[in-house]
Length: 606
Image (cartoon, rainbow, N blue to C red; front, side):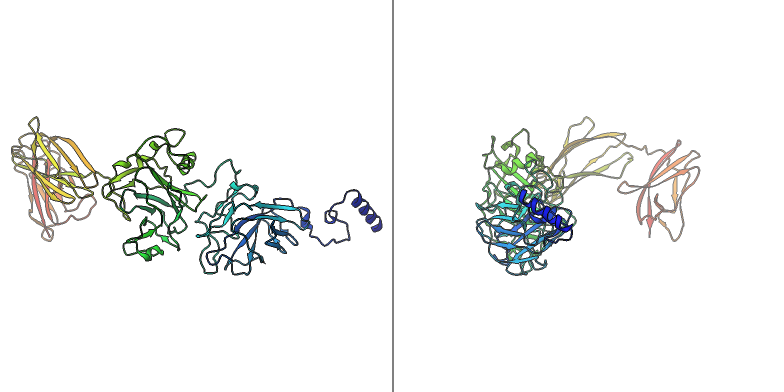
């Protein structure tokens, strides 16, 4: 039986020669794994390349393979090689289903906390290599043709070259990008976190068709950093970023770029930005705290950083916050212009990508200068522009940005709340005939730079100016009504502007201010008054008449404390509507029924 099978196999080999391992024969082992039956091109791919080495050493290169299937695959006698002959790596391990295989150059300290699956020799060229992965039969399984230059990756700082979609072709340059600078796995020989993801899903992984959508465009709602203020007309330009999230994040891998095309890394060392805190990036090193530049926070809780780049343009420019240089994910952006028309095609690429993904609000189909914040010519050297709101769903509408008369680097942006204007009355309403003093109180968010204007009038009379005085954020003035003999309409108008250009300008009519005739209810009294709680448990209101009565008790500020209702005598135990004892002091009562009305004061002693 066995002899007949052997003859049949030899005849088949002559007619249609195929690798022996593809025709299993009972009782015969050919020395090849059964997993070889299932292997097809693309089952194992070149997934990540640290061609520039790590920041610990340029010699510390490594390559990652990824198994795209749900089966373990034996890599024995597989080869990963460059077409120029160096390196040439013969493999001898099994790569688990949907698992990774790490190849480290020279020794196993290249990635200090992740064991290598293979140590190899031979350097990758910084100018590019064409890499080919073949199985044990020399059948090509995957390849990456970068002999004319690497598709991605960056040197100083070092970002790995990551495959975006592992099941899409390695020949597509668009299927490769830099590590995003945010997602990291592993540390180098100097215990520094890698901008790479060895033995983990790539930071820019995307399972869609490459070219159908650009997976690198953000902003990324899960990375809570936004540009909140920019000074582009100052002697030293600066940009402020803010962590609006709930946890600290490392911003050292983030990049800033403007229209000059230079990508500048925010920091050269791990820099943790605490929640609710700011980092200010300057274009001039003068005055920057060197410890902050290394990633420490100074005493004012602000991280000061410096980047070596030419200054920002005060006319047409942009600031884009990215996760990595040249192909990293977009996080946030702002642009400004003092003109109209379109940007040069080389200038607006960042904004066009954001607009294409609904992350930049534009009026038409193309980005124009009018879509940017278009008042740049109005920004003086001692001013900045700032964002009004900071959210994960930010769409960069130009209406979100305002001129700040007082730049606030490293501080909360101006609230742009209008100054508050309030009136107090002495005595408080309802009024009897006689003199009433009305005080106008103003409180602003920022110091008031010009003397506020205010005036009042009674009914149809002419306006009379109110003399105001004060300093900083607080001003006040008063006026009097000397003959309050009926309900009155009081008209008040005012204009207040603070240093941040917050303003209030209104004309308010107070209709029918209450008037109480003095002749009613003169026989009603309360006892004891003054009232000491230790001498009497309650306060008694007597002689209020036979009709149903209501007594309202107020503080001197007009806040209602208690309402009493009933017939005959009424009693107050000195508590408010919540049952809590009121504080010692002066209180106003107002009694009303169908027979009489009376108003008076109560003194409560300790």
